[in-house]
Length: 273
Ligand SMILES: NC(=O)c1ccc[n+]([C@@H]2O[C@H](COP(=O)([O-])OP(=O)(O)OC[C@H]3O[C@@H](n4cnc5c(N)ncnc54)[C@H](O)[C@@H]3O)[C@@H](O)[C@H]2O)c1
Image 1 (spheres, rainbow, N blue to C red):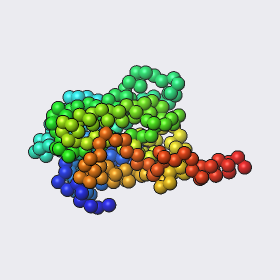
Image 2 (cartoon, rainbow, N blue to C red):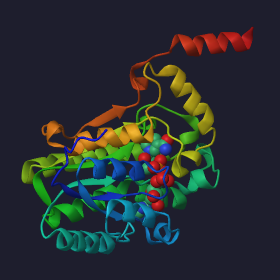
Image 3 (tube, helix red, strand yellow):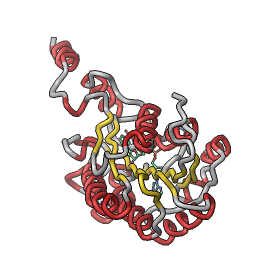
Image 4 (cartoon, rainbow, N blue to C red):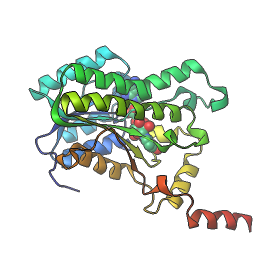
């Protein structure tokens, strides 16, 4: 898709790690739609190097920031406003990590220090980001802020582990801060609940292949890809969605509203035959 609906708009994109990342695809889509942005990721992710290619291709400055650190976020926002010579219009929070998932701890035997770390990275960082943007008065009226979520916030998926609770918290922050950002700054805050997607974070979830296949068979439109999620985010950053705020928006090919599909029933019955 190549419509310049973000022409003249400026923002910040968090979370592009490699070319599979949803944030990477979003940066490409925003660039194609005429938007300009600063790319950011945790210092350790920047050292891995591949994000430099994206920065070059999209002519975006690259500014490191650990999203759990207020001082990093404030400095990132200051540098961004200086770079653009004024306020910004959009922000993507595309950040997630669970130490318990990484280390294979089951939900019934969580390490609670790891839980706290993952909650801080995956959910509280969104509050920190919103707070830093709010106090810096960094967003233009009509601006749009999006974070990425997953349906495990509403329904149980056994191996999604403590990330399910992190996503529920993340979605709640979007509603709570969305109220104040809407009232005081006329800025939208939403989460997009994306289909399971093969990325570095996605692959960390045990049995992702099964998730993907089940979701594909369940969703009338099939799973949404990272590139399709990027297009939806472009729409959410554009002026075509000016009154959408405080929502969790399912971008999942219809998965969230299906009880069971005939394809899943057929596959089950076949396996029994
Ligand atoms: N992959 C899926 O199946 C799926 C489905 C729904 C939602 N999501 C969500 O999409 C978002 C992006 O994930 P992805 O699938 O593109 O994987 P990804 O691994 O490419 O992206 C995760 C990003 O988080 C960054 N990050 C981790 N700790 C950080 C910190 N302290 N400060 C700043 N950045 C930090 C990583 O460096 C990485 O770039 C996440 O919120 C994820 O939960 C993913």
